[in-house]
Length: 503
Image (tube, rainbow, N blue to C red; front, side):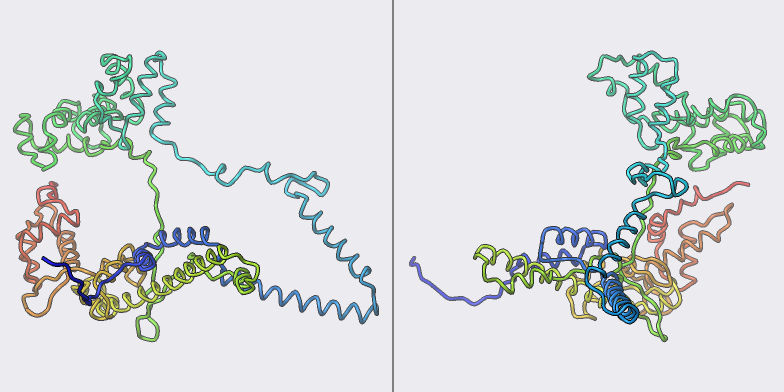
C-alpha cells in the first residue's frame, strides 16, 4: 500500500460563533432576550442604549430652551441696553441658588419653618409593602404560645419545617429524627400537638388522616346548617367512609358504600355533604402564588379590512454604536496595536448583535404573517374554524427551514382579537371529515367541540366516550373512542363515573 495525495472538493456547513449566537437569539423568549441584550450592553463598551422617546423629548426641550434663552436675551437687550457679562451672570446664580434651596427643603412635614428632612429617613417602597404570612410562620407563631417544653418546641419546629406547600408531612418520623437525639415516640407525641394547630388537617401524612383531623375539629354534634340528617353526621358514617371507602367515593359508587356500611344510600348522600366541605390541602390558603404577566411579541390587528402584524418592541433596549467610541476610533493616532485590536473585536461583535436583532424581528414578522394567512378564518370566526397546520407548510411558504420556524415559534406569544395565544397554538394535527374526505379539521377544534358537548350534557346521565364520538360523527367529524378519551384527558375532563351527579 502506497501513500498518495489527492484533491477533493466538498461542501460543508460550519457553525461559526456568530451564527450560533444568531440562532440562539432567534429562539429566546422576550424576557430572555431582554436579559441577553442587557448583558451585552454591560460587556461591550461600544454598545449603548438610546431610548427613542427620551432622545426626541430631550432634543425638543433643548430647542425650546434655546428659543426661550434667545427671546429673553433679546428682550433684556431692548429694555436695559448693553450689559456686562458679570451683570448677566449674577441673577442666574441667585436663581440657581434659590431653586437649590427650594428643592433642598422638605415641605411635607408642615409649614415653611420646618426643618429639612433627608430622603433616607423615609422607608423604601419594599418596606411599606404587606408581606403574606406563610404556613410555616403561621404554625411557628402558634407553636411559640403552646405549652410544650423547649425540647418539644424544637421537635415541633423540625416537623413544621418538613411540611410541603399543601401542609402534609411526607417524611416519615423515623427519617426525620435520624441524626438527632430525638426519639420517634417523642416525635409522634409532638406531631399530635402540631396537628391540633390551625389550619385544621395540617401535618397529616395522607389524605385520609387530613380529612379525619378536620372531622375531629367539626365535632360529633349534628350540623344542621348543612341540611344533613343528625344520624348521618354524628361521625360514624363520615369517618367510616373516609377511613375505608375513599376510592369508592371518588368513583361515586354510593350504593356500594351503603351496602358495605349497612346503611341507606340517602345516609351516604348526607355524609358526603360533610366531606365535600373539607379541605384536602390545608396549606392552600397560605400558598404564595405569583402571577406573571405575559407580554406579547407581536400584535395582530385588522386595518382597512386586512390583518396586519405589528412587532412589539416596547421594553426592549434600543442599541447603537457609541458615537464617542466612533470618534475615538476615527482619530486612532495614539492607539496601540492591542487597543485597536480590542476595539475592532468589540465593534464587530456590536454590529453582529444589532444585525442579528434586526434579522430576528424580520423573521418573526414573516412567520406570523404566514400563520395569519393560513389561519385567516380563525381570526375572523374563532377556534371552531382553526385549520390543521404543520411547520413544513409555513417553511415552504416563506422559504425557510422547518427548524427555523420551530425556533421562531418557541416561547413567543401573539395578541389578537381571540386573546393572548402562543404561536405553537396554531400548529396542530388534523382529523378527517365525513362529508369532505379532502378537508381536515384541527385537533384543537375537536377538543373544543368535546368540551362544549360535555358542558351541555345531563349531569345525571353523562355521556360515555362512545356517545361523544357518535355526536362528533353527526357533526361530520370522524374520531375514534380512544381519541375522544385522549382529548378528554388533555382537557382535564373527568370520566363518566366522576362526572355523574345524584340529585
